[in-house]
Image 1 (spheres, rainbow, N blue to C red):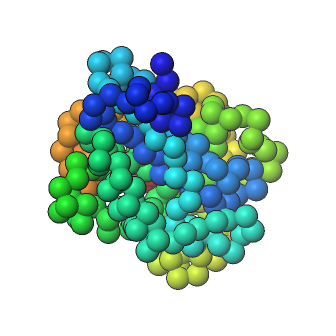
Image 2: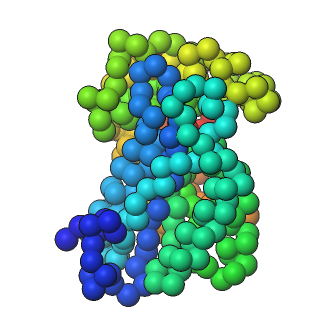
Image 3: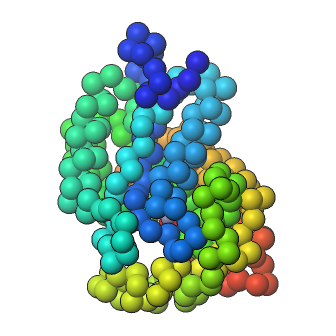
Length: 263
Ligand SMILES: [Zn+2]
């Protein structure tokens, strides 16, 4: 039986299940990836995590993904739809309040870094209200930031028919730490005219499959460890230095290492 809430009937909902809610975005991802990139990645990770946990005997439900997030830094590009941090914070609070009436535990699976401020803002209030809620990033060691090697490889694995590899070109390669102030103030276009942060040209489906497994295993570990930090984020019990790093291994020597971040 499917564990997708959208395909279930109410009598089939077990008592107090773990509910996974994928959080995505509808924002442009360079000239070669679709607007639903973050949503597709978060949905795929949540589905794969749920399948794995169900095999271990946990009762898991995957809620429909939230396709709108906080993407103001991409608003200059046509097609981007953002509800902003304030509205997203409110949406997360109301979703969790509603889910809590029947869910045993709620984990938001985040696929878009721009949603972090809303997650961080909503968690203290929700935890204060007594909801059993936390969130986990779709993270990979050495992942680049936006529409680069990481996301392009993931999409070549998940939805190759939606990737226009001929349009893929290197974007800005500077570390996010040197770009973030200007990016926040002026938007992505100010730091990268093609809106790519990283280099997608070497992306492969095989790397995407490996990244998907790394992200899935990370979220699974965090859920099973069940320990949250001050931002409501589930901690990874495995130290960063010991984690597998598909993208770093694939790009060693040709790409500078980037810090880990959900894109
Ligand atoms: Zn993205």
